[in-house]
Image (cartoon, rainbow, N blue to C red; front, side, top):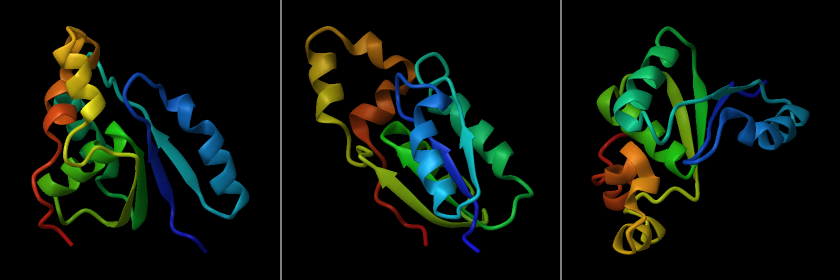
Length: 130
């Protein structure tokens, strides 16, 4: 039996955006759940604690994050490395910062990144976890 999978969407998306991926994974025997968060108005300062709360008391699972979702997943594990997460799959996550985010910011569109701008611009520190 495959371990449960929790999908996290990227910026400017809603939970439903990962629906097609959820469908494909379910068709291959995975138990799939989705995690939605306010990527613009809440940002990682809100999303990470919500994810930590969601993961509290769960059994082993895998996290799959698209873009910003991968950053949110890794930041949650950086804050609480003892979580029962077996693996994290980052799909197009700007781990060292996003060139697109920098370009938007340089051309006066930085507000479109909302409260996720710092994480998207800078990325994450070097990974020290398992």
